[in-house]
Image (tube, rainbow, N blue to C red; front, side, top):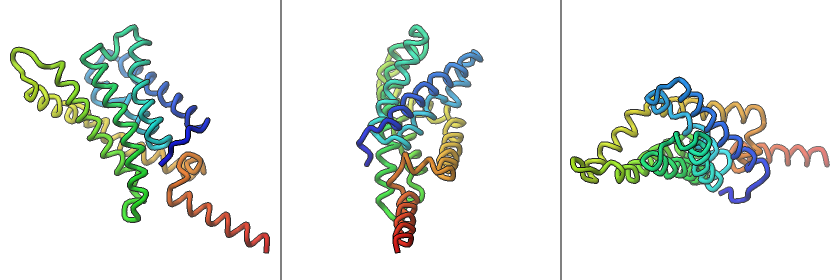
Length: 211
């Protein structure tokens, strides 16, 4: 599991956090909160960060992104505390679980080819559930108790973001594939089967040249 913070990883984390804030601002510029919720633009870079840079930088990206958005909009987005606090937990979970589960699945020969996709699915579910558990506290009133609020929140977290879920499951693997074809992915993910095969091929080529 990647625990060393390289310059490339740190710079990529900062870049993806900035992209997340900008993407959220672009969607909100249309003035439609439902549209932003539907596509969840802030989720995408954080999930990608967890996959590329590992669980710890993914977690940092998830915590920093909504805070920067909150501060840069003068506290307008996401609103404090009902949306900001649950979102911090949610995005932190996305980044951490995406990086952690990718590493776990890579260790199994039956799942290593699909490690990133499986990690994304689990991260999306875990993040939305954590958001619901935290967010339900802010929905308690004279009508709803915690468990009623929790059920409502869980349902809403999945049904209101279905388009974002689909896009993330399609686009993130495509981005990873493009980075792999360009020879860039190996710099981020040196423990993937493809990267290991490249190293073995390079070692064999070097031995051939020496002979």
